[in-house]
Image (tube, rainbow, N blue to C red; front, side):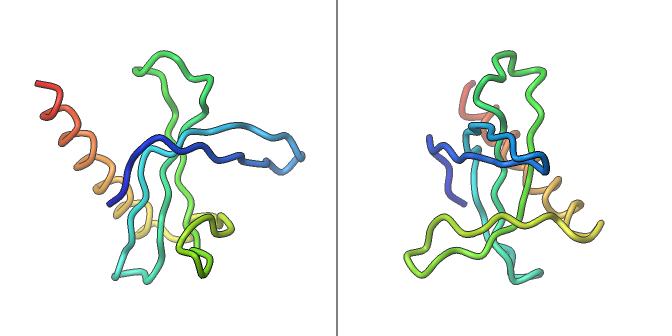
Length: 95
């Protein structure tokens, strides 16, 4: 699992661009995909941050593939479990 400060620009269905900060990325052997979790940079209140998730296939250089929607409920469940583990680890690190 990788995390660190990196920004990505997300373009919505209407062509609006939004700068987002990557929370972390991870690979899933179960679904044979890579995933990225991110949130809008302008989100200030940590309690109100809406975290988004997408799958992606990394380019040959191992970075920045095209984002794709999460397709199944099983993927969402796996992502939620991974996010909960990440947040619990982050909370422990802050203590």
